[in-house]
Length: 312
Length: 309
Image 1 (cartoon, rainbow over the protein chains, first blue to last red):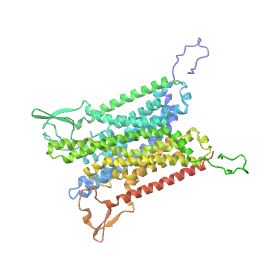
Image 2: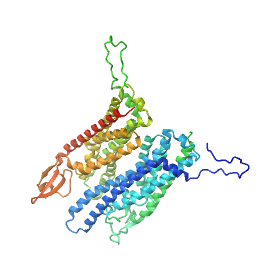
Image 3: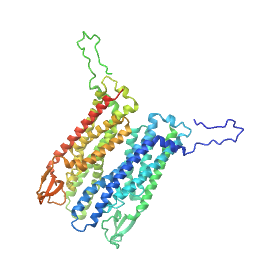
Image 4: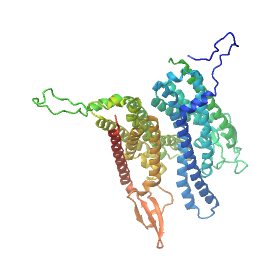
């Protein structure tokens, strides 16, 4: 039941338009209700970023020393590949998997807590209206999470930068692609909206968290496979596949600029190869961010629809 | 306030001593209160077991085929691709999942035991039953910890069986963190410690979500500290100046783990852990994790006793 301000003498004054409350009022409400969560997420990201900056300075220094070394580099190489690589790989895997926890800890309790504790009876009967309340909250929190995640991924990109050439990876390698560019922010947004939707679907916090983790894992595995089908691949006959190191063609020695070979086949006397060159990194990032954004928007709409349907 | 069964005529009945409620009753109570969590854990681990069994048999078949292949490079490459390609990717995924299982199990079962009671206010009922709050907590935590430890011990053994072909094929050193973590009793010990961390933090914070997040953080910190520093300092290392032990440049499965090397008086010394000490290392790690778990349970019980009602 909405309460509107009406003039005491309706006929004597201009009929007031029945205007709903402006959207920006939800900014204050969202902050008040979720400041603990937002501050915690920001604090954890800041701590992680500080660690990445300190450890990254060390790794960059070690890598510079390694590059400058011309003789007797065995020990330096071994140390870099052991200690520094294990640390960087560990952090990379943690970042890849940690996004799921953003969805579980921020997204799932968002609506599930209101329903579990019964406070939805108050929150949804304010002048703002429950669907607009849901959409405003999800958009505000989702954008904040995405921006914080983007900032963290930029720091991580700098941290991880020596590992790509050193450890036989390219920026199209699955775990590297996930954490570079803009895609990390959109994965965080997708995890958040998956969590919010699961929370409204299941209406209990802890089961919603479990479902979010499982759903996010399934989605990222699907995405790794889906990348092969992005419309950016090229076909060429070997030995005409461009190699950036020899420049003329021939079998591609593995380097950080080597293309991602999807398929090779034989047709008559020529060998054909379907591959994605490294230069297609940004188109692939935009495609992936695009469908993640569409998915997130669809989940926000679905969550608002569930909120609309539920009887108070 | 505990309620004892008292006989109606204290002076005359032989069974005059008040008898506390039996421990067996807690078996039913724990099942009733935690059955959702226990069933979910059983389903997920069951799926993991099925995956490991099916994929493990396929892997062994592929490995045998790859070893037996004599047809030359082209023919054997297709056979080898199944083992070194598909099966290896599945093994990597299984290894990553095994690293996550202890903390995920603990996060979802540990804090809920006590924190949920506080969040819902139901501790006022559960703690005033005939069994008393301390014995209630001891029984619940012990039962859940025992169930989780037994299940993960079995899962660890199954994973050992699953991963065995890759240990020989890839020549992974025995001291690699992911290999040590999942072998034998260490995997079960980590799960037990994580569960006790979760239960303790659940009682400390008395709110589920902060306890879950804190469990994740504490476990991650403990795991990183163990990989990076603690394992090297287990009291099982040997010191030698015999360079012939470290002759091969590339680590193989049985290579000794060089912890530290220094020069003194013209000779090079190595502090290392030989492969024969891997079992003592596992026992030592399981041991300190067990001690940590017991301390955390004791801490939880102390907090439970202190709490005013």
